[in-house]
Length: 272
Ligand code: NAP
Image (cartoon, rainbow, N blue to C red; front, top):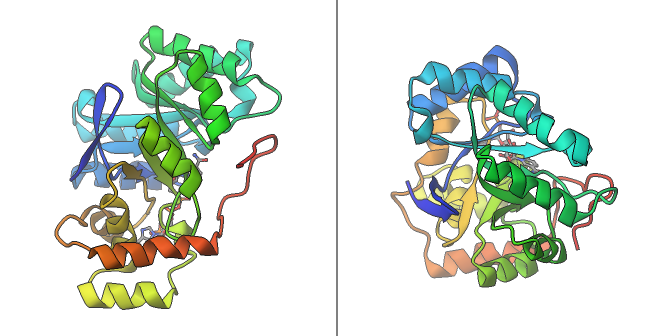
């Protein structure tokens, strides 16, 4: 496994995404993930599975401090009255005193960035979040967040070979802010790509492994693929025993020009 520093933590560069995994199936697959070595789990208030994530961590028997746990505050909770109670509620569901990372899930036009980032810093000062960051923020929104003095340790955005995040990614690299890739597999949408199929055949790897390997060969990218399949769980973290050539890396880099976004902006959010 590769590790990337996010604030105070050294974080496994591949974590488990949990969007749309709920109920007993969620507890089982998250437990399975921990059993086979996942130590980085991504959830959110929106996913309505914080209970299951907390249950799986508890049942795993792995000490809490060995798992890097991320949750996210949903836009409807960004206001003064709801922010802190919503985080406390998340932690209660997660059965823990702290999250390793709390992100603002989406910016929202109803609220000033400075205001909710200040609230985020407050929960960090109270020890409820070890680290703080953002998701779906553009450059200008991150700059505004930083003006409050907040140490924004990552921006979690859609990132896979078919989306053009070059401008944002280059700027984040200059600022030394690692990028956390959500929808790293494009929710499976691009798995018929001929060039990808050819590369996978060349290395005798799955298509997902080629995509995740391309991410892991970039210094500052973490990825949180989601799967409900035990075999794919295993597949998605075993990408550290082969290497794409510089020419292959460049070839995949060029696919971004297709610029196909999988996730559409929440109301009030802007990508540019
Ligand atoms: P994703 O991880 O790109 O793709 C998940 C899809 O790929 C599922 O259909 C899964 O099917 C399939 N898959 C997984 N591993 C595979 C493999 N090895 N081979 C073939 N197919 C495979 O999409 P995502 O779940 O939308 O994104 C990942 C995580 O990012 C989410 O779960 C969530 O934690 C986070 N996220 C954050 C935001 C945000 O706004 N911050 C937005 C979206 C997502 P099976 O389950 O059947 O294997």
